[in-house]
Length: 235
Image 1 (cartoon, helix red, strand yellow):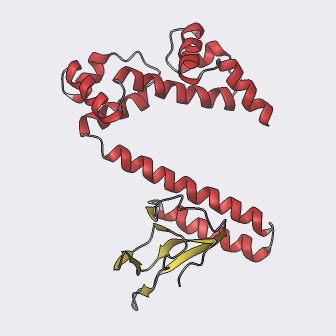
Image 2 (image 1 turned 90 degrees about the horizontal axis):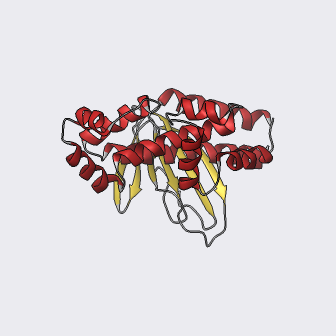
Image 3 (image 1 turned 90 degrees about the vertical axis):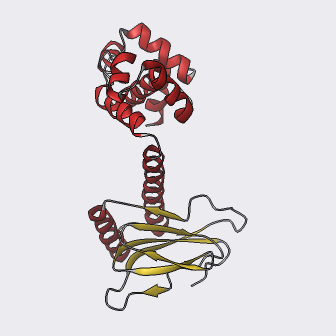
């Protein structure tokens, strides 16, 4: 089926084996494949007779002039979650518990989230192994007093070489990447807990609340207190 102007149709493969036309060629699709079809695209058009494809198909209406917003092909590796979503979407659609716009907004958000997660994972996989090893260490020990020498030892290279690798592939230094990870966690704690600034600073690896506040404002343009107040006011 060809997607008409003003519509998008997402097909999330839940089982079996199929094929979809892509740039004049037939592309095989399998469970976990997430296809975001826009106007002019063809939906899945062939199936394995011995193992017919099954998918969750969701259509969205939008402005006819809107351009493609997401990559056409993505992947959701957690097949158990894929199956659960398909079952949930079918149940909610059949029992009419929610109106159509609410259900579509819910599904749209989940599908977009998975696309962005896949993009992030794919980007991380493109980094050299040495950088990925350091990133993994930082993610699991961001609250520790990690030094550049410790990070370089994890990467099995010199501190200078690690610094150059990070600049080349991430556009920032290992130290700044560490600070960014600490601030990501700090944002979660500011919004999701009532911890004091001192407690958050300690849990996120900053020497004290003043150092935390300085780094936070330097990266976000506002104080931790202003950030928390803004999001609390949205609730």
